[in-house]
Length: 115
Length: 114
Image (cartoon, rainbow over all chains, first blue to last red; front, side):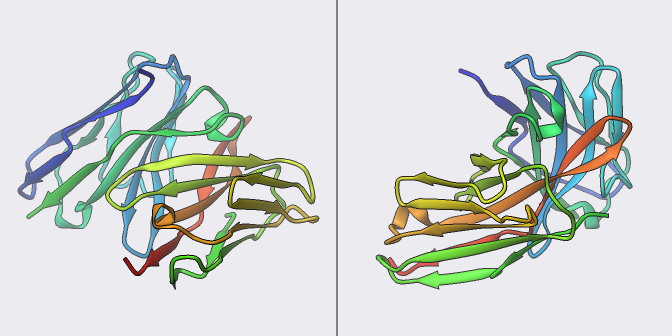
């Protein structure tokens, strides 16, 4: 089944404890991206990767890191999480074109709570 | 940067009533996409509109793209409980080089009495 898989679905952690949210897609998509969703703010892009050679900041990259060592995986890393990073996170992928030429496929989301 | 605005932010309807959400961009769009997110779920792609003045239908859903390609609407006829959720529009924004990214509106949350 074609899908974007995120793990974990739920995560509660403490301030400053490094964490990684994994994202994997099995559709051979070039483009991958991370969004955070907060009430009243909609979906805001954190980082995106046009392909394994190009990764760039989105609208709200502060406090986050990503890597794209292989096409299928795009982990989101929080080196030192803070409470303002408590949010619902979505990974998304598309065949190419930043979700413009072909639609985005979203993972099921990761609900992160930082205390 | 580009802004994509949606109204209303919330809409509560009685089952069977019609529903419309509007999307406006600060810039001309090459295309616009619509997504639906069910409560507790993830956004799911509904449709993409490309041509000026384009109208597309999916059963009870009618999507329109404005003549100036700066606005769009989604209309649902005779809403059903399965329509509950948040509807997002998204437009491409140039992000440097030859790269584009999608900019999402904040969404319209459709709720309904059970």
